[in-house]
Image 1 (spheres, rainbow, N blue to C red):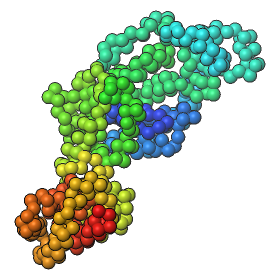
Image 2 (image 1 turned 30 degrees about the vertical axis):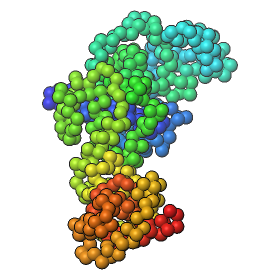
Image 3 (image 1 turned 90 degrees about the vertical axis):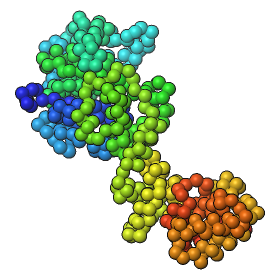
Image 4 (image 1 turned 60 degrees about the vertical axis):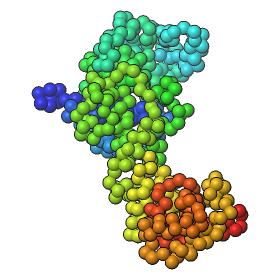
Length: 492
């Protein structure tokens, strides 16, 4: 594998299908994808589903769909295949078994017959000791002792025999890091049911798939010495590691559900744009020398380097993400924005599934009015739902402040009659009509405009009054004034 005279860069993202794609996982996938694209290498997707109890087909699909939505296309992996397939660990069990047998035959691993209860009791006795590591009870069992334990019906796990010494890791971000082997303890590589543990499976897969760089979160740093020991024991080359900083919540604790939503699916459903998520996640731990905030796809690929990844934890700020999304929405082509808004209006039953050209033109006009205010696509329902239904609820605060005035019923009645006679019904003509009405009633313009806004929208704030009335049309404006008069008569 040589590209331009150099070893081809190959990186991987290896999620477990035990939940939705977390923003932290998405950031890891993104950094790997950017690194691969920057170096014209390969980005491999591998599914680590050996946790049978927690893995599910549904989460598998969600993870793949989330990566596709973000635009993080993979060169090898599920749905694409590749020369090192299969890329799903549950389909590679025979491979792990082969290498486990090799380590056992060479005396680099041994059978451990300790039951889960015995291990738990041991942990409980030594719970104050740090670090907690296996006692080595089964490390040197005789063949007679093993036969006796097997006669009891015990099914052994396979433990790696950690040699004495020190593991040194040259991390691309953290520099040289050392780990004392005596503090690691012999660890399980194959469970008693035959499934591999994380460290064992990923070492074999990364090696056989010719991965060159492991780019992952800081929380995996403690796994690294175990993996290095396995590389050496299996005569595999040691890969290059880069442990990127954690993502924290705004209170500087590890990002979790208590900080709000943490899954890519949630932000997708709320109406965040996929490139907004990519752009924002890229800035969590990485930056340019001039602190650039907005990037195009090719520009981000060209500028991304591991050298610009920091060592400090990154803070996930939902407010900044929302601000960035609003900025991208404001820059969008109007027709593209309309296409993205339509599904939210449909889900809210504000428009029919089969939409005619007149409805699309109305959505286009609404989008033009609301584009500056929309921060996430789903907000279109709350911001502009009143455009599509006259059966909206009146906000009690503007009703109290704007409609509970003695002059309002007679004002709205006169307004209705004058608008009915208005031709053409255009924004400029409507404004002139309302200003004349204010003079005739000895009112300020705002004392006329505000009651009409509440009558048309049920609220005090929104797009320009004359513009929104123009979108509603003359007939709908009259109907809503009449509805307000009826409501006023019955309840005010």
